[in-house]
Length: 424
Image (cartoon, rainbow, N blue to C red):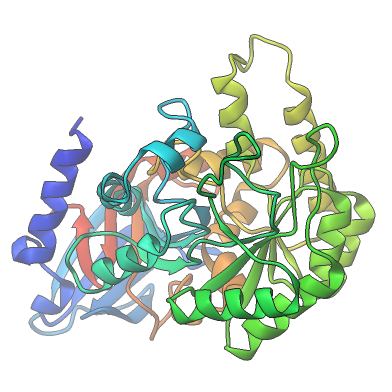
């Protein structure tokens, strides 16, 4: 297995001309065993790519003059996966605790790590990532996105949120009261403070504004709401006037209700959710990103051995809240809080979604057309004429066994092959 640095060199060779975009030929016809188009599976379909766009889909496509064909026997071709909750500027907490990353790692080191993380993520078949907070690294995520877009480094298409917003006194790292430690997000409160901070994050390049509607600052460290209803509504008004959306971190039922009523687009985590809150989210069309894999990883870091030890209370609670969300019919966002665990291991979240009660086909939809719809990305998430040629082929049928998504045979971003016959 290649080391991350070796993978990065392969990717840098690709963006400097070592790999062949489909547009270098007149057209490229992809011939897998089947195509999942974001909604349904189709045996015998082929997909025609010209330049960076899908130009044909169906069972009887002919190879245009001057084009070439790429056979992908035994595979399923599907849209590139869309990861809904990641932190490319973090690395797994069993390597270095979160607070040490924020306080002890320089921004230079964190960007260097994120460059490797972006390459690993794309090679895993994830072609779009919503990165939800730089966690103490300022607007480094904005710079990372720009470097990818300019072809300086390889990586997925990014939607970034900058530092994120927290209420004063609620977030970490913490120390003795006399020390003003750097925080993992920007503190802002009240009308003037929140308006200025929200506009600053938008002006500095945030695609989404992330707000912490609660945090673990209750009397015994339990999650309690931070912002008032009025403050959350203000952030949403300011953000949406710029054509952007708000995402809320919320674990408690009260904070989730406030965030939903305020008009946020997605709510992350939701450990303490109730059936009533999920019913409200469905009514208001607020999507739920459960981040199952983060809780699973943290429990394992603490010593839990799945299948050997009794299931921790937090895992049981997470299973139950996810089941209630499914029963309520809430739109489910695929997003695992990657960075808590290894980048490139994004499928871990989908595996847990299926283990916790979602069908494999619904999980596939969530990771493709579902997230594209939630994030209002009309140009991707489906295998359809006119959309971006962001595609992945995997060996096997992930609609029957979701783990097949780990066996990647081809990754294409914008018509350029980055994993496959020309990309290894």
